[in-house]
Image (cartoon, rainbow, N blue to C red; front, side, top):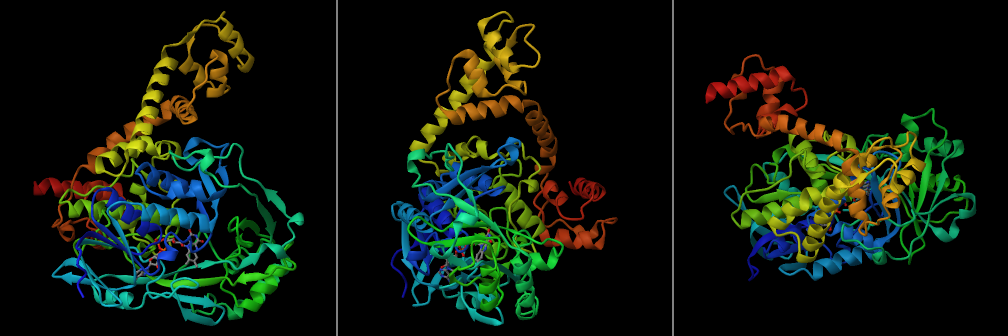
Length: 621
Ligand code: FAD
């Protein structure tokens, strides 16, 4: 049957990409349908119930700055918060939260259910309707045809999903969920390049069978950080500790004894796994000189005894899993509640997408999340938001939007994916961004919220809070620049207590703050003032202390901007450029870069090759 309502945007899949996509499109005023296997699993964390961390919290804060749900849900579901790299520079500082799996899911669902313009429907999508080269809607496994102007595909690890434990394997989207077989087959009939990746998860353990007294306790930070710019301490539920233990020689021997039944080492698994998040068998195999690996013992929630032993993801046979776990200090009597496993799934070559995440072959069809070859909730959520925005813009007949590499980690993520593609699960690192000092987790709102408001993503409350913050930063900066401290004043005497070289002339507060010994808190104590909004105080300190570096990065960006704005036409004939290697010609034909700057980021492109492109471009005009 044809469903009576026609939608602007249909999102397939209610994971991290799908929920952000659906919320974004609905916030922008589009009538939106979120079609997913199971409403109970909306916002489900397939693996570790943790959000953020290095590189990843930057994405979470960007989603938040654009009005998304992930940071808000983390604040309301987070049971342990820490700031990682807190002693390092602001560019690499990152907030990480352990979440209560159930609470997190509940918050996501409640945000979805209360979002105007958004309908939920529980059913598997088995087919997408395509007319000519344009998607027209989705068909469910019951035969219901939903019509829409645009479709966003966010089916995660479910397409052709195969779960491996030892030499046994079975079909599944993740443990406990059916895979998406019909849709996977249908997508393989369309002109997309499909390949296989794999990821894995550790066994879960019953906390009642664990001896925490022999482990190192790891409490969260005090004061407890918040993830969202709108987050308040009162939003957090009860906070609890994680623990640390480690593997030992005996554990490694047990694991080695299972190598001959490992689906990874016997070739049963063909998909490539995440290099930066290897399974324990992979770690022991690759780093045979290490006699121990750390395990973070993380609670799965406040109302469950289940623990997530972070660091021992495995697809070894269950008898090996149990023996290995029980050889670890504190786990001697451990009861495993769920075996660890690996999953192989289909993903699509992201080089077949444009920067707006639209497929190059089928118009109005957008791809986001794990199916683009990424791993992680944050990477999925960020892409989902972008795909939702662009599906909505298309439905509204407006131009697409995406952030550039100097505006957001989201810009880096998408540009990396569509320019370079990926052969292994892609995760975000701060090292992937050239302009790290500009793309900090503390300033995602200053970078993106105004754009979010213009797109219709940011509601009045967030916008008002943002404007007040921005104004307060400006006012405080002016105060720091225009308040002068005389060398013989009471303020100078207070400042001298902290300084190696006492003040010998007048200084403005901004110059004082640039001194390594002085923090914003010390400036406040010297001048007897307190900045109420601590986000403003933090911002002020970073902006002033790093002003020189920041303006140098900005100058570099302006220099490169020329290339960003130099468009390469779709029909540019790369094969006729003499002097360009065959390999580069092929890569350029495949990637079809939109600008000279994008072409320059293709692996193997040298400055000489970029010059050839520019010369050829000039010849054309
Ligand atoms: P998912 O969260 O997988 O959501 C997909 C959604 O689509 C689900 O709701 C599903 O029901 C729905 N769906 C699928 N097909 C259909 C259909 N045909 N019709 C309707 N609905 C459909 N990430 C890490 O960062 N580190 C890790 O160590 C890690 N380990 C993992 C281990 C395992 C075993 C798994 C399964 C995942 C792991 N991940 C890990 C990845 C992480 O879970 C994903 O990156 C993230 O969940 C991707 O989000 P997504 O929205 O793209 O897809």
